[in-house]
Image (cartoon, rainbow, N blue to C red):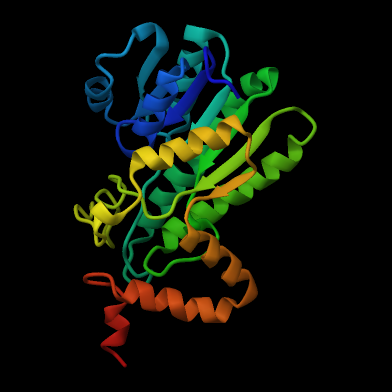
Length: 274
């Protein structure tokens, strides 16, 4: 897809991958519609962009009516939709034993249902233009991660939805794809939910050593241009997906060891009971 004058929707675009992808697509001449729960932050981040090329909208993708209204605003401005990037997402860090079930509901509402709502209301317009539906997923959508039960569940669900939709759309000209970044420097871990639903407000990872949001966004933009089927971005991620198919029991142990080494790992609770 050549992005010049195409209409692209990106959810969760006030920071991180969404913001970086929006910047890239705008530089390539796209008309870009962005949503976030914090409209003021959106306005601040994109204050210098030509309003004719940009639509900023306050929406919580976990709320169906917000998604419907956002799509309606896009169509009202440009009449068409060529691509939808379901990027809005939230994470968690807590043992399932300790987590309030509302934490898991919140992750499903945003990561899974947000994708479903936005795709449902955008799809009629994407069908007309034989456009693209993108899901920004995670290795956690291929391989369950400890202390991330809600996150992994929501990404597995997203990928199942995307794969089903892709098969339905096989002969329509609509392209459905998902991309799986590795650990990326973004705000998602700072806003990850703890066991009681409060924001974690800190990251257990060394952000400076992670893939940048800009690099991740470039990979996504290129994948959209080439209509890739799926993209797993890192060597570690590709290896995890492959080995999980071949020797899952071994991967169980290795994943446990990796996440046990996190600062203040929730898994220490079980280690201390040995």
